[in-house]
Length: 238
Image (cartoon, rainbow, N blue to C red; front, side, top):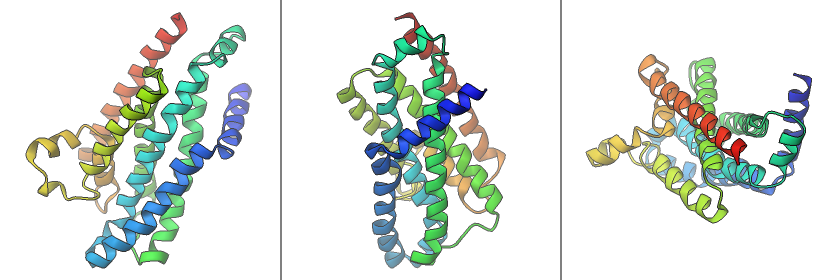
């Protein structure tokens, strides 16, 4: 346990110095929040009620689906994997500590948006903060598990970038945070249900914390963790 805590703390410090993490977990989401928040609230004053969850879902999706996978691909595609095996360290340690570090950073991002939204755009805050942050934590965990699958499954960095975009863009466009789902064609609205952002956005809205929005996220989490286990066993055999 002591070794795990040391590895997690070390990974967190390394991520703080990472330019890629700074861009995907902080800079771009906050710029998007500043730009789109102003546009949404000026076009529709009622957008203030859903501004916080929508901007948070976008930031979480970017950090987990764009920022995390390249780190895992670099980790398990280099000599670090052999160092783990030579030292008798479980191969899953790298994925767990990297995901845990990203989880903390995305929770920090969520906290920044929570504090900034009412100050910058007079956005409404949730009436039940505990339910809101519990929903946020679950959304981050589920989206990170999907990011881990991408990072472990794809070895080539150029292919990984394209595949990550194929998951990220539908997550944003079909989740309802930019365009209401009711305006989308039925096949696209149903496709959006396959992504954590769709259910996380609804879970984080007022009175959205319920079993109907929880169970799809739990199923995605269980499926992604199972796939990660299979991929790690394949990496171990190489």
